[in-house]
Length: 280
Image (tube, rainbow, N blue to C red; front, side, top):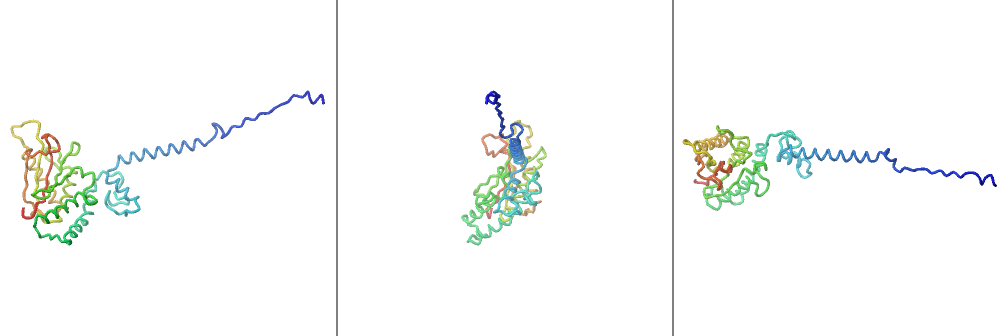
């Protein structure tokens, strides 16, 4: 008994490390998921910045279960409604042709509901012009003009007819250089207007306007400039199939009819295409 009581008592303590400490792998999985999510986020931000509005709409339509993937509202002829996701080409002409048949059907419905296309009464003429205005701007549904071009277009009904005004902005002019070469934006807009106005038989008028130049010149070419721009619009419309016989007049107004108080504002650089009332 005495020998056993004199033996030393040894206590063993085991250190238990939960989760393996710094040698565990759970944190690595979480970190990998975080890095993957961040990479996907920055890819999304880059794609949103690199694509146009029509291409994004085409992508949205493709993944929408209620819209067929062959819809031509954005892009072009591919599975995503576009030639590729990064093309800088605007599909205005494709959208134009796709909606032209819808515009014709809409006007036919309007005629079948009691509006005679040959009737020249003021009330029914207003209804026809309003129908064209709605088809052009999409007041009653999808716009005939893509969103990226819509900010360059305004319309108004006057005693003369339906006025479609196309105007420049600081970063997107309608004409380039001193030779008044139409920009791609201007060509796309004119071709769409030409298709819309081809649905009816009314005559048209084209008027060119310009902002006031800050330098007074002995021989100011501003009259010739606005006249030349109106002539360029006529050429684009005729090349797109518009009937040249329907052109009633071509006018260059120089800077005599500014639309803003600041006569030198780029907003005054504009083209007005007027769908004249019957008999005008």
